[in-house]
Image (tube, rainbow, N blue to C red; front, side):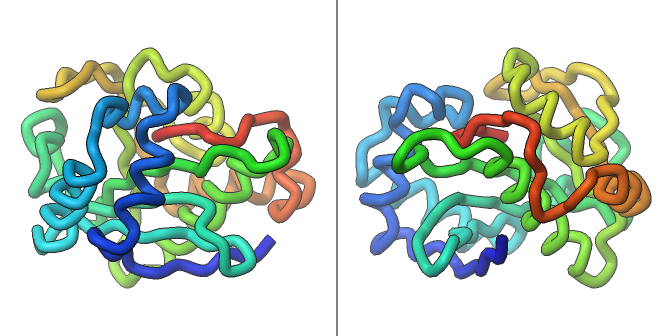
Length: 192
């Protein structure tokens, strides 16, 4: 599969993002009770921060997932671990499936996101901090090369801090039979 990315427009994309982040499957995203105006406010803040950026991932030109990249040194993670040069943080929310779940879809999205992040100059390690209770995403993370580093307390959750080095990602990708057909049944709609 081939995905493209574009910057989130906080105002224009708010109704779409609202329809995703308020779904029960997105409970770990932390915006279940958000209003459209609340989504506009959140993504305006993110896009103007200078250290946090949101992108829509498109599948055949259709919005299919939301990714955020951020500098861990400018986030609450700075108090939770020793940030290294070359670290980049990532959040991922896959849209609700249309026409039913597609086995391997979320894994293929995650692969595309990691490929994009590691293509950025200077990035050597991707950092994630999903809710410690979000076991589905932990499985996917490990499958794509993330190594758990332990549970950390953040202002809004207890999170499983995990790291994926470029080498771990490439090794995990090579271990898969076909990187474009990441076919283990990870449901669409996962949140990280």
